[in-house]
Length: 140
Ligand SMILES: [Zn+2]
Image (cartoon, rainbow, N blue to C red):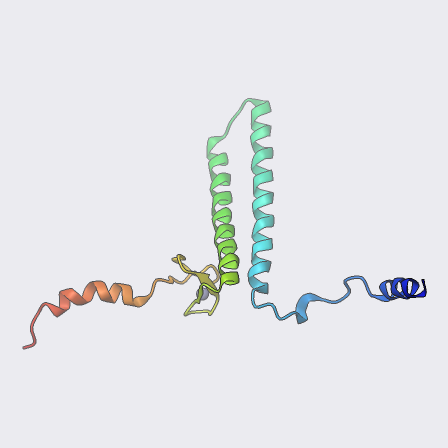
């Protein structure tokens, strides 16, 4: 009985989530933050688009250009979110590479760095395509 009350006292003495997550050695903290931010933006844009469509519907006046523009912005963010989520999933499996420009991790299929926008395709790919053409000519 005294053990239980000790426990309760210990629980009460524990500060409720007072520790900032800064000290946590999470290598993907930045990616997670990016994911959360994008998820929030996607949710907001989805909400916006829904509200806009509703407004147009009750007024029976659709501005397709406005809807398309909003939808395009949402699609862009959604694609970014998908990439970041793929990265996080891949990071758990350890199948990632690092951007040569900024060092940010990326998934294998990624064409561009989500952080700095640099192309991620290995330089060897284009070199391998060009080499057979150059190699055809003999040395003179
Ligand atoms: Zn980069």
